[in-house]
Image 1 (cartoon, one colour):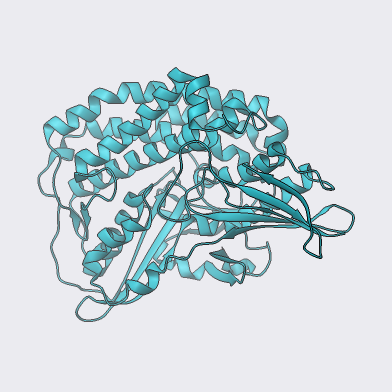
Image 2: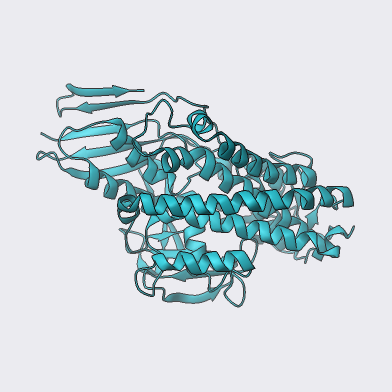
Length: 477
């Protein structure tokens, strides 16, 4: 008798989604799907607006990573104007971008995935949350919150607000950085580095303790995509696109991001509002073109890290590779995120020593000189593309946003299926199982919309139904 299990909502992620698991007549998992159940529509309602407004409009897409959308949008505006922004403006944009990666990665590890990694996948669901983490590990929880605060406060010092700062603009940024603000950031950087190093140690302990999960969660061949420097180093603000396959072979060479449409095709499916991007040369139907983005992908595609401590951690991380190829297991996203967090803090430290950071020339002015502009950055969750087409007045006639979470969509669905097939059989339905399936999604730290989270207990109902609709089992929390 076939059955369907529904998990709704998926908890401790940004946005709203559900998971369905289909069991066949033998009680085995036949299929599993990750459904994004909300619709935003930014690509359509931005048409007709001036591209100069877009950094402030598109950053409203998300309350966790607004800086990524603002910067990608501003870079698309730079391309429409055809300008090279002042060196100080690029360094300030990088500073804000690193700060955003810090706060987002800290949020993911300490608040969203930490309850699973540090308290246990099958720990008491009433305590498997931020409040429970604070009760069990008060000092660590406080340090994690302060680390995120460091990133948020750095964003606020630059842009006057920690969420949706109206600061990045086409041609540069609105305001330079003062000495007092720079000194505040520099003074708090050592504490942030100490917490990041502690988190890395805890991450390795979790990997050792959860070896079954590391072997199962999202462990399959795929392609990987990320930005790299011209010589192949880890990059998050600017650079070239690099695709690699599951053996580490480079595909298509390192490519100008403005050519992304040659390599990425998007499909839609009736059961989810989230698109399904794939590597176009391999085909967009099926898993052949499946690729992953985000921290794991960025570490996999990079030839080196480029900062002392992150370089050491990258070397250590590569012990998890199967042969000479990339690290394939999606459970390793957690550790990759922490290595990137350390990398960003080191880059912030370098910027604190750069006198050009305080230069007051932070904006280039020009008319609209091009009709198509493409801006690309590495958002916390992966490569983010903004493509704008404008008319003679600079009004938008076409907008395309390819978000990181969408690019992981095929992999997230494959991961949910893999975990369900590993842990689910017959009519067994319990909190530990449900949380393991959900955690497969948390590995990717998806950002489905402006983030809205309830602290502590979130409502959830899962029901096991017979084909005739009869309720066989119900679980609520």
